[in-house]
Image (cartoon, rainbow, N blue to C red; front, top):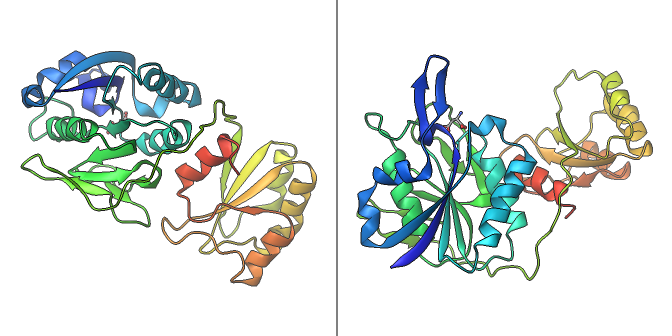
Length: 301
Ligand code: ASP
């Protein structure tokens, strides 16, 4: 029997209807009551860490989740984090960095419909997540709708469908069949020797639009780190060149990511990209926006 820890944080999976709309109300033990099949392969302890819509989560909450895992790392075979789906990708990406040295499975899951609602995806997702957490493979993943997604590749692309997540740029790591079998399609990566112990949440993401007003950048002078989410393979438009250069000269570190969810940044391809390189902007490569934020927050780039 594998020994798992369920860390409950709220989200739709824990929601009940209130006069103000859906709001998290169920704790971890109540969630487990809906999934008796778990008892055949694992025991699950519960840590009710918070009860929030994931819209309300901040870096401090995500650090608390990482700490709850780390403090219990020796006592459990694996960890399941029940989480709202709206910002699950941000938590998954950040945990990939904060727990990169962990030798245990860390599995995030949630649901698009509350536990107990007709046709809810919640029981299957929680059961599948526990199956993956009991499967011994180290690393941070998300398990949703039968798919096992690398934590740093998770993207929520649909706001209402049950099958709401994709793996950006790479195939899913594996799947959990309707028979409950866990299948891995990609070999495991070994844990890293060390992980960052702190993060700086002062990272601003600016999405370029064709008509973004260059005067906007003056308000950012001196802000520690700014990620420009640019078009396609990446670049800075000529009409923003002076403004972005002045921002970098003000002491702000400027990074480049792409609005495309796959393929990444290639600053060398186009003159607009070389313009960004020449002014000292740093490419974030093929990272998702969420992973780019996490990497910059953790000071890894
Ligand atoms: N608003 C909810 C949340 O992110 C949505 C969900 O869990 O599906 O907490």
